[in-house]
Length: 186
Image (cartoon, rainbow, N blue to C red):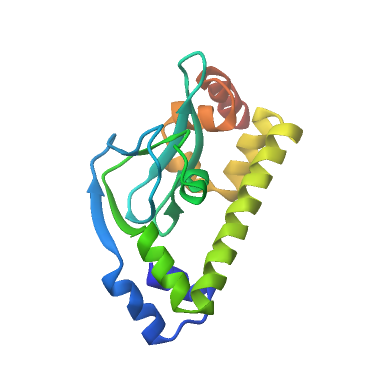
C-alpha cells in the first residue's frame, strides 16, 4: 500500500510511517464476502494478493458484476463509505485474497495529519470518478462486442483471470453472447 501512495504523492518517510499503526490485515477465502448489501462500508481495502468482485442482485435475482479489483488496487463500496449509508452491493473474493485495511477512523487520522494525505484522498477519489464515468459512457456508446474488445486491448488480466460468467455480467451481456464474441475474434 505504501508504494501505491508514494506513486501518487511524494510522502516523507515519517508520513508513510503513520500507516504502520493504522493498517490492519485480513484474509478471505475464495467465495467469501467482504461486504454484503445493506451493510455500511466502513473500510477501504488494498489487495496484496487476490481478486475482489463487486456485484449487486437485480430485480430478477441475477447477479450483476459492476467492478473488479486486482493486486495493488483499492476496493470499497465507495458510495457507502462516503455517505455512511447502507451499501447497495456485495464484495466477494474470487480467489484466496490477502488484504490491508484502512477503516474510516484510520483514514480520518491520515487526513488530519497533513495536506499530503488530503491531496492523496482527493486524487484517488478523482481517479475513481473518472473510471466510473468511462464505464457509464461505454455502456451508452459501445456494443457488448466493443466493450469486450476494449477490455481485450487494455485490460488483458480481466480476460485471463475472471470467470466467464462474471466477465459477461460485467460487460452487460449473456455468457452465450460472450462466447460468440470470443469465437468471432479467434
